[in-house]
Image 1: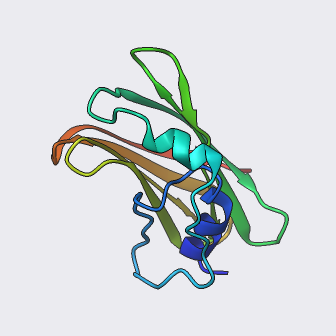
Image 2: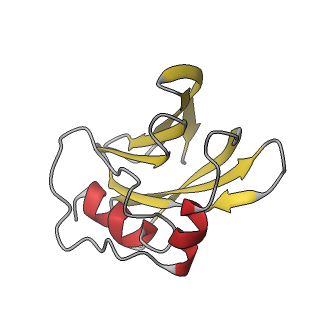
Length: 144
């Protein structure tokens, strides 16, 4: 399964259709659901101009060999409120990315790449406000 389709399927419960989902080699999300759920409606109500996002990231093996899951918890650092828990699947050796927030306000980008041998993962997170990069972080995680 390609990473963008996996993300679209896993994140459909928490992401509104207006949120962008992308990957390095742009491919259409086959059979991806864009129906707004109650959680997505709640996300659309967030004032992304005021949010100061914080992230907690974890990379774990998925149920299928050679597939890994990025689990994220996104909070508002001002209020302490949990905003969402997106999950992103990727195959070893391939990058998967997700963007949440609102273009022109606050946009959070997260990416994960697991080494082909599954020994480590690289995650990156960046926060943009009104198109200007405010913060970024890149982390190398040992998986075994």
